[in-house]
Length: 370
Image 1: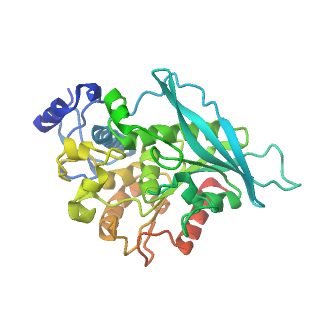
Image 2: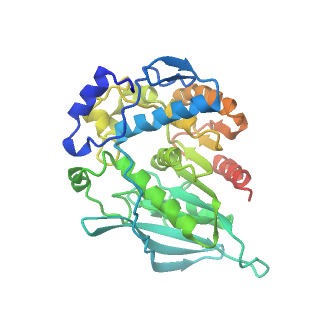
Image 3: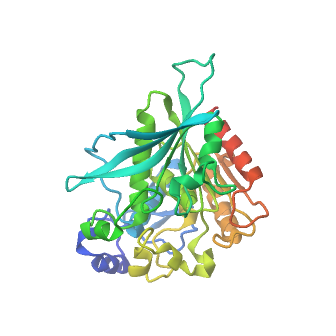
C-alpha cells in the first residue's frame, strides 16, 4: 500500500470536488533537493543507486507536480489537429505561416491554439524528401505572445523563433493561453474542472504542438526540441518532464527553487495563468509545495538541458540555480550523461544575451545532429 501522509489527505480534502480525480498521491519528500533518495511502497526511505531506482523517484516527481498543477488530462481519443492556415509572410530565410490547431474539444467547442509555423527556405540542391529537425519555441510573458519571438515585432534578444528558422529549423511558436491572439477564459476552465492550473493547460497544449510537428512529413519526429525565455523557459521544462519526445531543452531565465524565488515569496506563481493551488492549497509556503525545481531539472535527465541563468536576474535568483544544478548533476552522472547538463551565467539581468543564445543554438545543433 502506498504511504499517504496526514498532510496529503488534508490537501486532497481541501481540493474542489471537480479536481479530486488527481493521480495517486506521491510519498512525501520533506527535502526536494534530496534527489538520491526515494520512498518505497511502505514509505521507507531508500538510496537511489541505479537507473531503476531513479525511475521510481522520477515517477514521484511527476505525481508531485500534478498535485500542484492538477492532473495531466488523458491523451486518449484526441481530436484531429485540423491545422488551418492564414497569413503567409515570406522572408529570404524562411516562410512564416500563421496557423491555428485544435488542442481539444470540450462540450462540442473547439479550443484552437494560434501559432506561427516557420518553414526554412530551401535551396536548389536540397533533397526534397529530407526531414529537418524542429523546435518548439515558447514565448515569454508579453501581450504579443508569439509575436515577441518573431523579428517583425519582437523585442531585442527575444526573437528566438525567427533566429532558429534562419538556422534551418522548422519552428512552431504557439501562443500561451491569454497571450497574443489566444483569447482564453480561465474562470470557465477552472469551473469545468478539467485543469487544476494554467501551467497544466500549457503542458497539454504544448504536447499537442509536438503532435503537430511529428505529424509533418518534413519533420524528423525523433529530432524535436523546445526552447523558451522566462515564462517560456519554465514552460519548456514542464513540457519536457511530461513529454520525452522532446530531445533537447533550453531554458533562459526560467527557474530557480521556490525558496530562492524572491526569498520564498511565491505569490508570483499563483495567478490563474499559472498555479493557483500554491496559494489556495499550499498557502504560499515553499515547504508545503509538493515539488521543486531541483526535481524538475533532474527529471529532464539524461536529455541535454541548457540553462541561461544570468547573475543579475531579479526574478530567478542565480544562487538557487547553482544549488539546484549541483544536485541535479548527480542524477545526470548516475545516468551517464553528466555532460548533457550545461548551465551558464552571463553577467546580465533578466535577459537572453546574444552570446548565450548563440551558445544555446550550438547546443541544440549538437543535440539534434544538425
